[in-house]
Length: 127
Image (tube, rainbow, N blue to C red; front, side):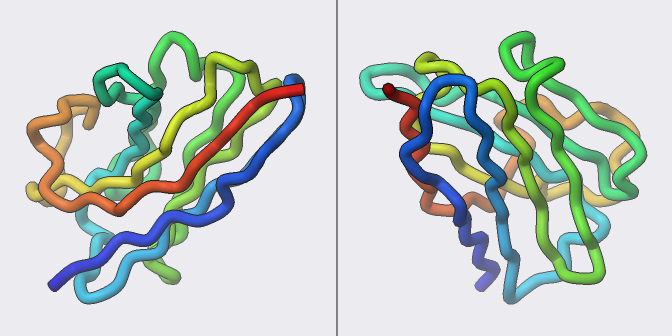
C-alpha cells in the first residue's frame, strides 16, 4: 500500500515561514501530479497547490499565490510546500496527495482526481 507522510507543521507567528514535506513510500509517484490541500476547523478541505509529474507546471489557489511555492524531488519521492508570509487564516491541517492518473497534461487542482492522501500535519499561525 502506498503511503504519504507529511511533516514540518508547527506553530509559527504571522509573517513567518514554514516548509512542509511529503514523503512517499510504497509507490513511485514520479509520474503523478501531486498537490497540497488544507482543512481548517469546521471548514471543507480546500485546494492549496499542485505540481505536475515533471515539476514544470504548478497551480496555486488565490490565497497561496505569491506566498507559497510547491516543488518536488522525484529522486527522493518527496514533495514540498514552502510557505512565506503566513497569516492566521492559513491555520489548518495540511494534507499532501497524489493523483491516480499518470503523465497528466492538465492542472491538478481537482480534488476528485487524487487517490492517495496523507494523514496531515498541523500548521498554526498565531502570535
